[in-house]
Image (cartoon, rainbow, N blue to C red; front, side, top):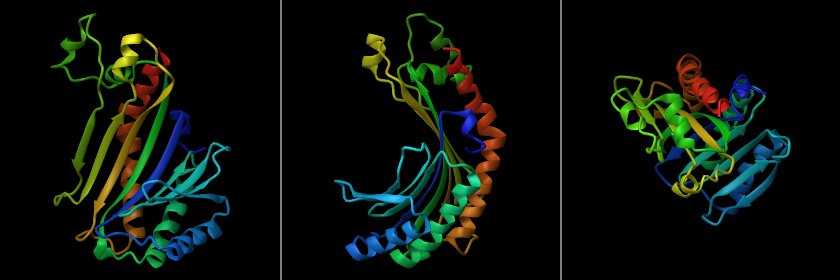
Length: 247
């Protein structure tokens, strides 16, 4: 598994290419695109069309690691769940970014943004919001709200967005998603469910310094890994893992 797999229950990496105009959805175009991916990665054998019209191509999930591709009306998504390495994810992502413009007629003029996202998931049967607040803190000015034994945290999903260049075209976003309801807190019945930590590097298109999606992906992946290794892992992932392990 990847260098991040030991830090959480599941690690995933993905890209999202968002367009301004609708992407092609004709039968021949969609099938030719997905068939080209299947030739490169033969384990892509599960094709479906969702009720909302999105097209999905996935590998089998039984092995615990799998790739997936989704073609939405204005977004192309690719992800790799529990990749053997970030480099393996990068090779697959580059292939999708190089193949898609040819098959789907995607032009840089039509692109809104490109996202590179790392996902860390922790299975936990308990109050997600409470353990996140305990692990990450709520800020010294708000700590007193948690001191009363009658007060219980029922929603805490911190989000932070940063501009990484002077024009705000390259951005970073950290957000935590919990899955605990008020009903579960009232009854004390907590099914095991994932707490998700998402870290995304977004490049808005149009005035970016990169000529191709592949070049931009290389830079975004580099920035993402540097920030994950230097900041997110020691200050978010590891504290959350420790807090869960003590419960």
